[in-house]
Length: 184
DNA sequence: TTTGCGATTCGG
DNA sequence: CGAATCGCAAAG
Image (cartoon, rainbow, N blue to C red; front, side):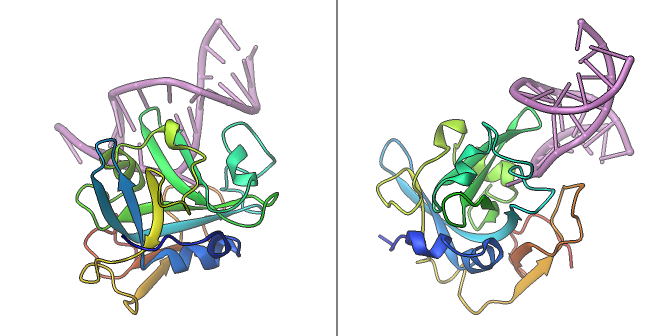
């Protein structure tokens, strides 16, 4: 079993956490006990002063967990049919999160597909992702063949948003086939 | 009450 | 490129 990333890892500037998550893995333990590892290959940062962030403009029921302690999951429902998984960053009281857009696991390319494949919905919101006993947590990558540290990291504008498009807050592993879309 | 849109995906 | 599909907020 891999070591889970501790709370201090997430208690940092969101953009730094996003970049550093490339090379870590999302672990999913299903109800039957089976556990899978999905190396993260594409993420995006969302911050308090970011018009594209759900927490922009204050605390609301949907994004409440973003204002809580770092390291917790933030799951939201979008377009009437998809769920997306984030991990909360920044110290308590400061909203921030990293959207997990793709992982090196079959069917986990794209934020909506990742949640569908890993069977994640709103009931997985606000879980402590630093806790390896939880059904979802993030830890060091053990599948070296699929996601190695030292791989080339690409940076681009975020996908699918209409505000603050110019911010280069999307990070991805270059040449990884699971990255949801080619954008430089 | 009605309309429009959203951190998406899939089919034509 | 547009439909699918729904919670929420703004408009009428």
